[in-house]
Image: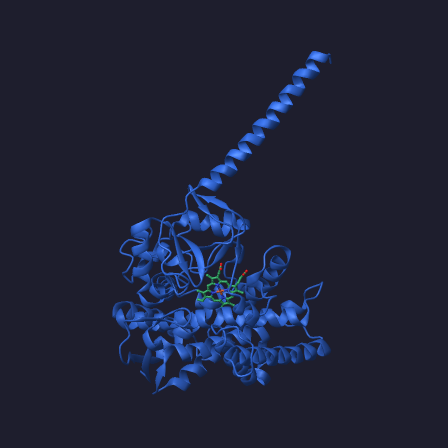
Length: 463
Ligand code: HEM
């Protein structure tokens, strides 16, 4: 290589380097100059939190999108936020570029559930936990507990017979008992009442001010949390001594080769109860309401479920996994309820760096909210979105338009169990009982998920 060639190569390399630097600086200037999405930040501190929880959520979200478009800024629950409402954007935040958006929760919730619970993590620890959780809740695992879930459903319904009940409260107890069964198997029998008592104290502090002084709700919750961890430690000790294999969630956690600590196990068990109970209970409550309001849909469900009863022989009366696969109409009622009620209006992520998004800047530290409710209620994705019409699910929804269980690495690992326990309860509810709603029920309340007014009081009687 002669001197001239070396000189030319050097000039080329230097020019490329300076071009690269120029482009870099241009792009960072560009990102600094990008506008924030349109929208309103509401009042200082409280932002638009009051409007969010006082208006009909369908109206709150839809009116914002109408005014500002599918990406907008707002300020709720003490944080500046960007709400996104297109299926493509939700996929980007939850799946394709999820490393830019980490899961985020209020600090008080993290302390209540436990810092090591699955929701708060990303990376290796999260994928290890997720594998263990999925192992316990995959269809092959939960197939074996259908008849146990059925016993819980029959027992719950019997205790409501002839009574005026608060649907949501009773469904919470049902979902709690199913969650315990899936987590601790039959071991929970000895400890069920204590676990329930302490969990109910714990949950009272979920939305309290995190002030840890004697007498405060938060303080009582933290004490209840300790009691729960101690009960779980006792169950763990007994299992370690007996060395039996268990196919429930605790068994899956204990089977991990590197071993989870007692604390990690307790945080994740408390976390799973939290994720499993009120979600499933509020979906069940909405179904009970929609069946009252849609008699022809109710009748179709009854006929489908009665056909399953007729098919069974006298000796083989218990429900099986295979039976639950013969419930397409009831399954579509569940899907349509998940869409219309959208009990989780949105989820939270946080931008880990400044992100350019559809020509706007999402500043580092801002919350990003994929709004499932808007996606589920957009006429582009679901014609006549406010109509309760389970038959629309005869055709599969377009990709990323139906996200009741989220999407991506944090999507719901309990979705099969949730659907199963809902089907089992509906089987017995619709074949043996009639019910009527007592009092007004058109309003929505939060508890913390969207719920029919007053938890839907109903009177239930045998047919
Ligand atoms: C109909 C009832 C349910 C609904 C609508 C629901 C919905 C969801 C959604 C939307 C997410 C994702 C949240 C996000 O990405 O930020 C999620 C996560 C989760 N759900 Fe569910 N869920 C239900 C029932 C259950 C049940 C029965 C269990 C357990 C038995 C469960 C366990 C979990 C867990 C552990 C996570 C966190 C996953 C992770 O961070 O990797 N859920 N759920």
